Image 1 (tube, helix red, strand yellow):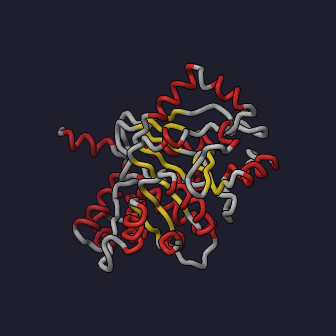
Image 2 (cartoon, rainbow, N blue to C red; image 1 turned 90 degrees about the vertical axis):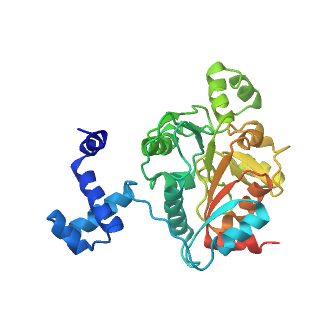
Image 3 (tube, rainbow, N blue to C red; image 1 turned 60 degrees about the vertical axis):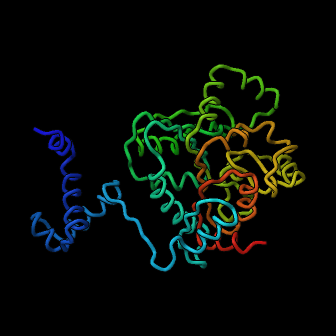
Length: 326
């Protein structure tokens, strides 16, 4: 038996059928009726096999628009901000909840292009990452690590279930080892954080964060219709909100807060936050930010000012507002 035959035999029967149906449909241009006849099954079964082939990553579909390549918005964002943008077509009239799901679905399909073997991939938890993780397309890798970027515990919960589920989905999708960061999102006292950061077990995780190949994150914003988990999950108290307002905060990345100009210095809450310092985050060669909804515009502009983003996956309305903003 050849290696190719052995690999084929290793596939489960349904996957083998999905692979064959995909080859007949996409490579040989057979109709679904013709494929059904060849496979001895029904047309509806062929449709399900083709869906399985797409959802499992056996088939990837890339659209090249004949109208503008790259798209006008992508080109304008590259010129204005020096970033590679992937603009997701979304109607203006839908809710931010539906907008988030559609952007997350597209982002999950795009992400597979960038995750590969022998990588350290940093992932921040949050509403956007939670939605994205539910749509990830499997892509087996070797010796890849998924690294949690910030702690998730607070006074109400350890955060383990919430953050771990997001990380587990990433690990399962890419066959990667998950490195969790078992600390609170915010320490009560900056001195406690400093002491904890001296522990060897913590230093190991911090060292992993410092050598990321890829970072994937959403943007926190107190203004969005779909609030980030940090703003709704019991992580901040009234005094914290007042402090953020005084400090001119417009958003956060992995619970590290920033102003409209991208600055973080003097923001008191950052001394207690467990997310990576932006100087550390910027060491990652590729930093993919996923954003949906014009309400995130102020946070997005701040993150761009902080030079946190190399690749942006964003809905059309938000991209247009970013291009049109003075």
